[in-house]
Image: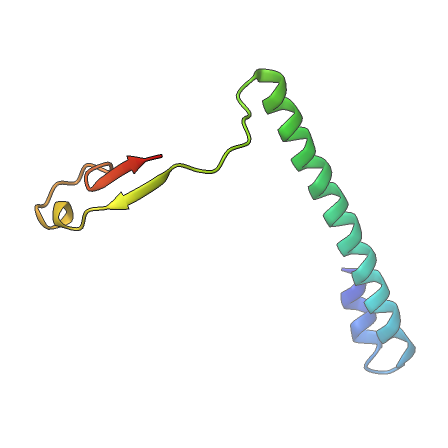
Length: 82
């Protein structure tokens, strides 16, 4: 919000453009820091509950013939492997 005001003022005074860029940079740093902390907290809680494992997602093969048969089951046509 403050960066928007500075951008508006930059129409009249050029120095406000740099101030708006600085405010935007600070806002990005704060946002990314909070996002990292939130992600770390979720990983910690999942490890604490014992449901967190580091592994690749399970692969799936798609069988397009099952879609043509009109079956609406969400798992029809998908074969898991791995």
